[in-house]
Length: 149
Image 1 (cartoon, rainbow, N blue to C red):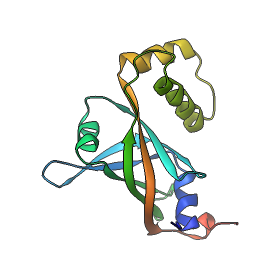
Image 2 (image 1 turned 135 degrees about the horizontal axis):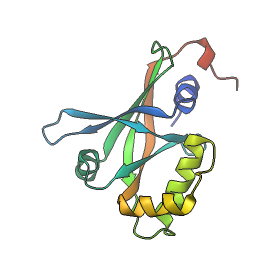
Image 3 (image 1 turned 180 degrees about the vertical axis):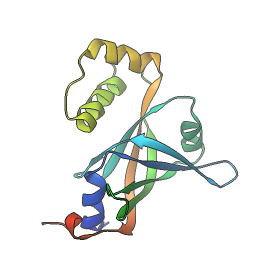
């Protein structure tokens, strides 16, 4: 699979987008999410809450898309793929919480001021990770998002 490097560059430069899942009646459900895109694996990772509509939708139909725009909104990328859900965070030191810590660091670019509190909150919130494996991308880019490689 070859993805347009300009679209990937635009998506990787952003960390807020709209996640589209498929509702039971076939219509899209859009949710604003923070995400991080791993360029090596072309996988977008999103922290989500168990019990929310987007998680119910993904359990029923794992197809999803993330829509991102340039700061001015005139360039955009849509990343389409299949989502794999992690287990729900059950202990402050389990694999899901470790991945949520990693996601926080990638999105924020810094450490949390109180990791113990953060870890406890991930368990209390029943958070999990949605991993969207990008299979296709489309959109419209401008020169500042052109690949330098």
